[in-house]
Length: 202
Image (tube, rainbow, N blue to C red; front, top):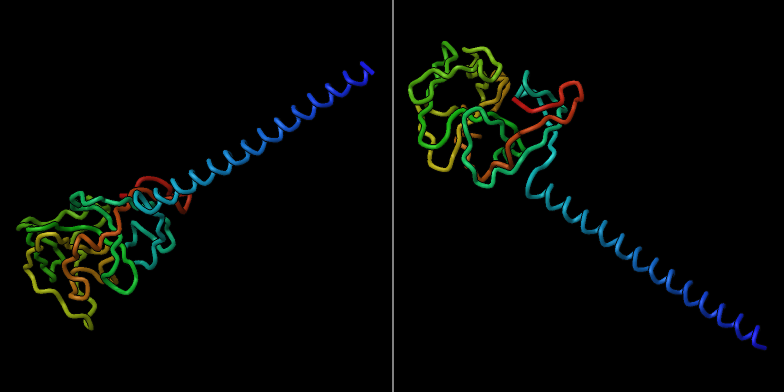
């Protein structure tokens, strides 16, 4: 009888051990799920407030950006934009557009269309810094209402141009005009795709 009692104690101890392990497993599973959910929330917040992945549509930024390029765009959080920054704009045209900042608030822009030269505060813009030839800024979209130059950029606005001037609808035309910085979704920082051109953007 003593042996049977001893065996019963062993079974009870084993059952308690098994139940304890099962309980630990349930707790571990809940912790694991909680950690995954927390990670998902962090990723969503990062993609919502810090940066986004956008796909270039069209050829208005060729040759620097091609149709289908995928870019990481960072939130500027109200930081001042600078000449040369490439930005994604929303609520300007029907679809988001990607353009290059040429002038910022209180700067005056003028364009000599016969020579294709852009002037900012009276100085000719050297577009070679953007990997572009000088003298490419003409007006070819005759159906669009044109911005009157010289023009001073209002406070809280930017003047933008596409790199592919013959086809770009940008601040040369009143449909875009001077863009409110609140319409800047973010600044392009890094190219993810295509893989043979991956790296920091220009």
